[in-house]
Image (cartoon, rainbow, N blue to C red):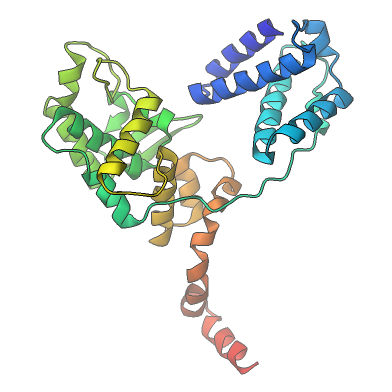
Length: 305
């Protein structure tokens, strides 16, 4: 099975899955392999013989030990793996097709207030190489709503500053507008020597450079966000995902629709943006009464009943 997993990893890399996603799928499959072989090596024939009943037993084991969200992630990894095995004809059918995924209750996304975001973006020092880099990085993150992997994988050529957009390369490449402030910070980072200072003569195309002159690692970006949040006096839990949620929430509060948020985030389905739907709800009533052709009439009718 290890060879099948190795082939699967190459398949994911060719499909431009993020390193984080590939690592997550790999760990989930190794977990399944240990369970399937009871600690022993698992042959290709054993994988091919896995049926619905065997998989249901595995689901029961996962359900006993993990929360529904984690169970769903494991099953998603298995579903993708068996789809790959069908594709390469290692198995004749995908038994995961009949496995029911657990229902997941989606909580409201954690967000920062607009004032907290401003404090975070202003936290890096203006007159230090690292501060100039961090300002550019945080401004671009909040301006585009990009994921960590998407942000740190950006190359200089992905910035179209004259046009005011960035090419975000996730599963699907998309053009995302850059705010005026983000553009200014990026120009300062690129043209005032900050990036070249750490590249030390290297011709690397990576946009955000570590102190070692290499592409910044996702853990480093995570730590940068936490450090500047502490400097900004932000006491709530903070991570790059919360900054991404804040980006979406603040735009929706200003009137942007969920379809546009879906486009900016690179989502295929509108369902993925429904976690933000609650943000519009306090305004729906006012919008209906003031904008809908029948709004005022309906409002008066409701008051009389």
